[in-house]
Length: 102
Image 1 (cartoon, rainbow, N blue to C red):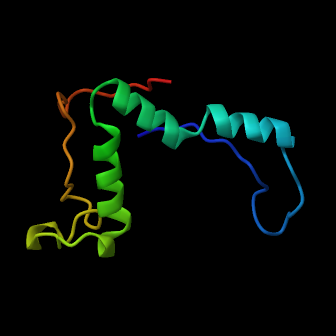
Image 2: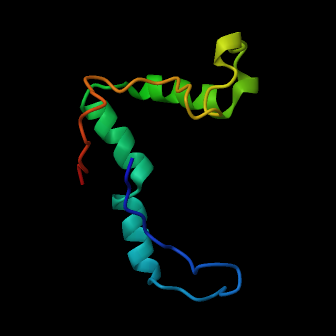
Image 3: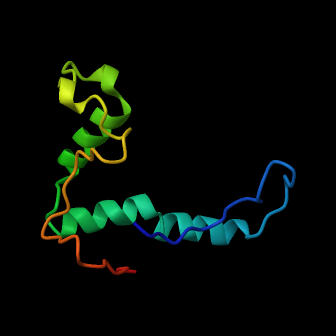
């Protein structure tokens, strides 16, 4: 996945108070260009997932203690090892080079 990012702050803690952007510009970018919200909107509008499905996946991934179900034994290494990915890319071939949609 290739993403374009936006720098809200300086490069490190050694340059605090240095702002590359005005407050108005940052607020506008956050309200119109938040990559998480854009991805959610594209997935919902393309019928890849519903808002409820996305919430369930986020809860399962980030808050496993809140859900009563434990993962199956074969799922324990998901998101850890590089060659055992738990997700699929629909209608994709390993010979296709993917393009940016931005």
